[in-house]
Image (cartoon, rainbow, N blue to C red; front, top):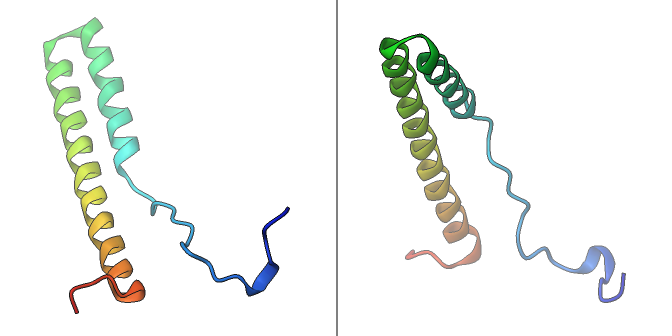
Amino acid sequence: MAGHSGASAPAEHEIHTAPPSISPPIIGLGVAILSFGILFGLWLILVGGAILLIGIATWLIDDARNMVRAQQREGDGAGHGAH
């Protein structure tokens, strides 16, 4: 690997992985119930749609919180903050 100088090169960015979340299984459950509702009745469509919306909302809230945490870490560590 040309251009890599080993352990002496400073890391520019850390590898970021999202923390575990309950939102994807909630969304999957909502879609599954909604799908059964197409076959078995309107009440399952409503229940599945409600669960799906709750799953999407929790995912968006988790994502917003993670973005704020990442920006705070960048500001504290890299000197880009308003401190």
